[in-house]
Image (cartoon, rainbow, N blue to C red):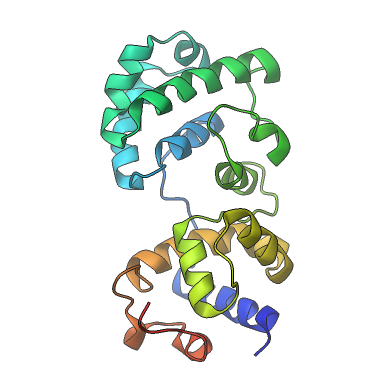
Length: 212
């Protein structure tokens, strides 16, 4: 099976298994998704959702975040880890959005990655979920699963993104990455993949290294 055929088969299978392709981070405003994703670095989405419930209740607007006391933001986001850097980035993001973008999220990866602490992974998530444009979110689930399937042979996030953009239907790529997260948590786990009951076994078995 060619890589493009394999990618299409994976897309179709995951659409059946996970018909609702949703981000596991909770948010109401577009900038909240941006900040929540920044907080999710080396932290679980479940933990981030607990922390941001307090954060967004206390600081309900971009202006309030831009004017927030750094020490207070640090204290709130401390459970997410790397709290000093993340707190500084949150305030910096709010300030830059207000100063340079009129309080709105820019709609390109190039502009989004100018914001403090925002890389291509987060920018792609925003492009897909907020602006509904083709996007490939190369998180750990995406890189691990696509590598195991044989879709990619590299692990560098940028190279993975570029490779998958060549293989995935653009209109389905963002949702496919969301489904990979659910699939990675339920079946294709990092340490103990559930290969014998995997819904993608039929398309993956010829590529899967079951010892990974």
